[in-house]
Length: 271
Ligand code: NAD
Image (tube, rainbow, N blue to C red; front, side, top):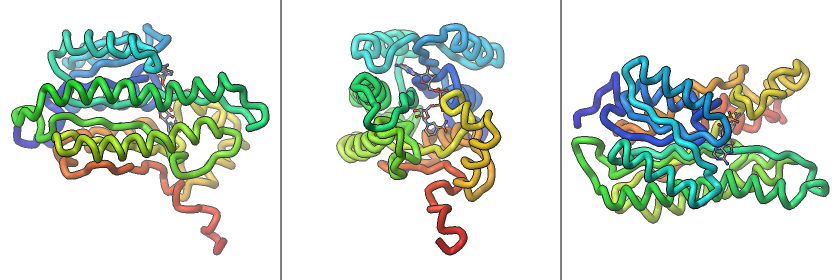
């Protein structure tokens, strides 16, 4: 299909995990506007997912709310079955669901460690595995895309920036980075493109406190050379491009969307 600059994902079927809020919601809306049919996965807020689906449909798009705990193999497989039954195929997976359960290291419980790893890393593994299985069966259909399928793993600047008090979260995102790269290396020969997105500080429910308290916001902005917090649209716009055929030669890389947060801003004044 020739590249369509207005609707670059026209005719493609996508699944966005954690699509009922924050970055996932932004991506679901942007993908629908770009012409994709979108499965909006949610864990515990059906009303939020249904509202997004209704709004997408009322603007002429195609969308479907899908409940699943991404850390649960059976639920993930059931979600893929419903999506495939409804849409007939899948072309793009945005493995976006993620949580934080913060604690100082001596205080961190095994449950806090395990749940963050389960959702942030195992959840991406389970969803990516289902997507890859389907991409391999489908193969490349040039009328849809140059690739057999695309996966975007939602990482974080904390795949490279250590984060005291959030050791479970940083470990999960470091794991996401190496899972993404190893999977990209393994599947590229089948026409599958796997990449990551590493957002900096984006205003969403996950970090509401950091933006709501003026002192916390001031300290956070000191870490962002570009001088503003990110919005879900900043990530969503990049995700549309990364999933589209305009990024067809982009394989196994992390796209940082962070206003320069990974540029060691502490060295701005000569260190
Ligand atoms: P968010 O809390 O709005 O989104 C997280 C989503 O994951 C929610 O929709 C939630 O329902 C879903 N989720 C949680 N547990 C789940 C489960 N077990 N199964 C299915 N879905 C589940 O916050 P967000 O900022 O939009 O986060 C989205 C992703 O972006 C996360 O992976 C997060 O780590 C990453 N990220 C966010 C920021 C930021 O500054 N907001 C920065 C870097 C990375």
